[in-house]
Image (cartoon, one colour):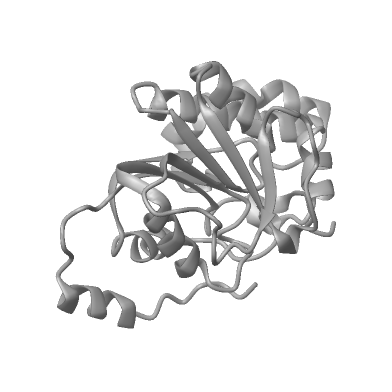
Length: 237
């Protein structure tokens, strides 16, 4: 499986991909129900979730940005603003978006910190960043039949080191306890697995969703330098 917009789209059109989308939307519904969604940016591959944002707020101005290394755009909605971008230099003015949603990007780029810096730049004060990353301890990173099996995975400390200099963490979700196995028994048992997984094997959740807010006060530069000097030990791409 080569990671492109086409391959990720094919994954989401499969039964196991539909499970990922369904469980992600459940978490998004809980996290964003009271948030301002006037201007939303999806960065990475976020097409499976744009309809959810539109349904949550019919007046939302949604802008989907696909990094050029994924190889282009798949058009689903002619009314949706979509463009291929340099992921390290977004063609947007500072303080533009209320929400930025990152999916299929932090684990794939060479420098995820630059993505976070750009997100911080284009978010409005108190804007919300939603980051979805594969978990180091989860099952999904161990299989290459899904997009999360490529690139790096993140431990709890690693995603904290990445976000903390720029954002205040509000809440975290660990989910996707359904194994990445393409079998009808797996599909049928998914609702049960997602229900008992957090209680029985919380470390096996395949994805982490981090909800963060943009920091609008001046950072302590000494603490920031210390955090930047911490060895993150990201898994190699």
